[in-house]
Length: 573
Image (cartoon, rainbow, N blue to C red; front, side):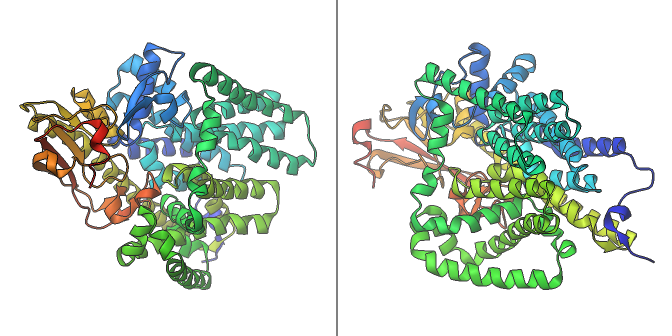
């Protein structure tokens, strides 16, 4: 049988774009509908509280106070995201209530828009847009992020469609498309500040395409003006411009990192490789055996040398200590995900080298720009920050596949098997993340029942999702600055968290109970003991980890003596 290009081999005769869009819509719903009852998780509650605030005060989204890391403070000083996703939540909540199911169902729309937009965008870059869109959807980065009610998927949906309208508007010289792109770009930036990065990306693309500034450049004024107006509005409301404050806050992670910053690119590659999993799974198809072996050998030498040289600096951070102390268990997964990240960066670099045109430059800047932002600008390396490059990776994979020569049967089988393998693992990871979220809600329910007959007040510490469900059940967040613990009071503390969680000194505790909540899956997205830090690399260098997941534990401290705020810090062991 003669060989043909993979793009032709994987295109069924008579298969239309409309059928592809229907298939992608069905696949997106099939992947995400099982999580519509998932409990709120991590920072979901921050967006939820702002959405509820907007229902009460539409023009003051951050004008309230919450407890964060054991201290009461204004939301405008705590959140580092703009409010458009919160307004979207408010619309859904006002119409259907703020239940988990209603809000998750509402957030299916941006997920579907993002996947279909990737298909539409990919049509101008590759003969295999269905592969590009499928390689975007069937990733842990997308399925886990789209299962939340945070701003990331909404931002990316606006981003992709803004790029579509801009590129098509330039081609057809249609000002209405360029205006639509500017509006969508503004919406992307108001969903998450990273969205404004699309301005320089499209600007460079357009300059390379036309070799000069044109009337099209004037449309970039709109998103810049919108962000300037947002800055002035928040400054008038809260005494500080929130966009500027977020921009100042983000690089602090790098400025205080010292020599540990040398490890950030490798760590970022780990998150990219895990979150954009098809680039790793399909590596044997798109790269030669010699390239793979050479990469793995060089990677092994680099990681070993890097760990040895940086060990003293790594041990200065919780993240680095995990790498140094658990290298035998974390190291293998870390090396695998880093290899996937290298594959992603190599796809962008080789595509640019081979084509050297505005399209290849756009994709390369999209990938490398997100990589550099996540590694060196964002406050932490996490999956939410690498999410924006996943559609570009899907397109790059499809472009790489376009020119390959394989028999039709082998082409379809290999690509389908790789995408299904990635999708299966991604779904498994999203299930584990949902289990982790539901575990927090179940723990809150059990702890409330367990302490309902307490003689004194019941206080708790813990991150936002646990806080949401405890406060929903009438419990009180502990405040290091104002809370006095009296004999008979109870303090509930999640065990194993890094920030803002401290047990009371032993002399003031009469007894301690422990609630243990087992986790059902052998993969986890957010467990420091396994180096899994999907939501923040401060918990570990892996986007997710496979193995025996330890149960979550909650300590219930029964106070036996008076402990006041002024002597809390000095009494810490």
